[in-house]
Length: 246
Image (tube, rainbow, N blue to C red):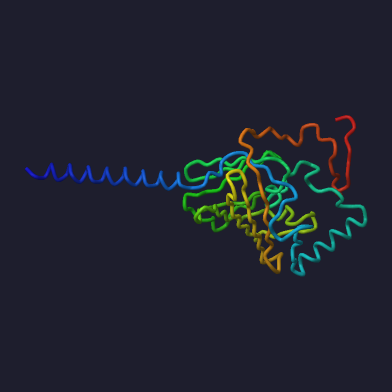
C-alpha cells in the first residue's frame, strides 16, 4: 500500500529537481552581459598594440618568402588587387574588421554573428561541443565559445589558406591558423574585442590586437550583394579591371 505514494513522492522530487535546474540555467543565462544587437567597428580606435599602424605579422622563413614573392609580383604589375575586388569575402580575421555593421544574435547554445559585409555569417556554438578532429577548411572557420565571467571567449580553427592574415594579400596564413577572441562590454554600448592569432606554420609569435565596437540600438543589417553591378573587378593576374557596359 505504501508503494504508490513512494513512487509519487519520487516523481514529484524528480520534477522539482528538473524545474529548479531549468530555472537555475535560465538565471545563469540571464546573468550574462547583454551583447546582442547591431555593432559597428569604431575605425581608428585601438587599445593594443598602440597608436599608429597595426602590428605586422612575424612570419616564418617559408611565409616570409611567400611575402617576398608577392611583392616581386606586384613590382611586375601583378597582384595589385585583392580577391575582394571580385566579391570574394576576406575570411577571418579580416571579416570582423570591415567598416560595416554586424549583428550578434543569442539563441540557446549558439551565438550567430550576421555580418553585413559580403553577407557573411558566423556560428559560435556554446553547447559544450569540441572542434572536429578534421574540420572543413572554410572562410570563417569552426567556432566554439564559453563564458569566463563577463567575457565571451570564442575559439576558432579550420580556415582555408586562400585568405589573408595581415593587412595585404602577401601576408598569408596556413591551414593551422588558430584564433581566440574575447568579447567584453566596457560600458553598456561599447564592446571590446581582443583577438589573438597563432599559426605554427606561418608565425614565429602570436599576433594580437584589440578593436572597439559601438552598439546602435536602432539599426538593422542591410542587404549586401557585392556582385550586383560590380564594375571594378580584378583580372586573373590581379590587375584592376573595369566593366563599362555592365
